[in-house]
Length: 103
Image (cartoon, rainbow, N blue to C red; front, side, top):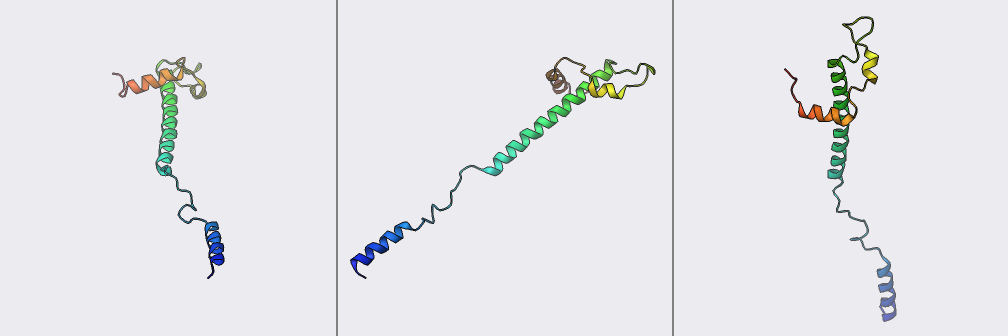
C-alpha cells in the first residue's frame, strides 16, 4: 500500500464508530430507584387507607353517624362522607400513636 492509500484508510478508520462508546452506559441503578418510587407510592396509599379507617372509627365511637330512625343502627352513607376531625393529619397522628385499642 502506498502512503496515500494508508492515509485514506486511516481517515476511514477514524470515521468508524467507537464500539466501546457506541452505547451509552448509565451509572444510575434503575431497579433500586424504581423500588424506592414503588415503596413511596405504597406508603402513601397505606397512609390514605389508615386515615380513612381512623376517620370512620372515630365517627363510630363518637356516634356521629347514628341513624335517625333506628338509634342503634349506623348510617352507612354518612360513614363515607363524615369528617370526624378537622384535618387528615390528626387521624394519621392518632392512628400512628395508638397501635392497640383503648381499654
